[in-house]
Image (cartoon, rainbow, N blue to C red):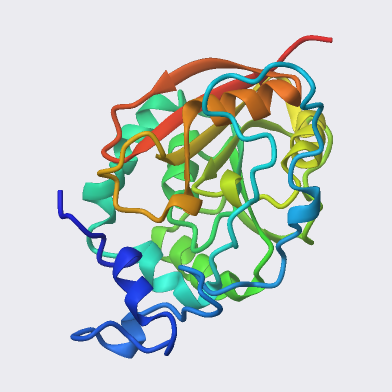
Length: 260
């Protein structure tokens, strides 16, 4: 593993001038503004980040006032297709752990360019469906080009407004959020709405860079620990049903709603 990630950590030195890192082409460098590792999109609402009851004793390592990270801008989209992504994230291993079956309906929340949407659509087959949701419509063109190139027809790109889920009641078997949950502006409200979109036995899969591991070369705001995610999901009425730490840099944490 390299000491520094080619697309995140090196940008810190270039933030003030918004210039590309030395030796890289401008077209390969996401814009960096206002001291953030990603370009802000103007959708951050930290004042409503975690509307939870913090009166009870907290587990060690939990921050009840966690401020969501600034969402990655579409201007950094090339990073989502970087050459090292397979080695760093092992997507095929992720899909195996998700328990995907033909006929499943999956929401790829914060789908970006459809990096995961298309291979998941291939796995759930023509009887299944993948709904990729995004707050940034600028991703649509490259998403749809990827879908067309793969020849799949059971995929939809759906633009949603900030603060809305954009999914019908009891419409999905699995909600997948890859490096997205830590950017959700109001996670408790989001998780409450997500419960209504899940079918009976529906699950929520969160993939997050491991905050517990200082060797994972991702900026701290874009990492999450298991104890933090577990606590936040429990506050919203979910329980963890599985955990997989076999991905190179990320946790895969799967949750189900607790029965009322």
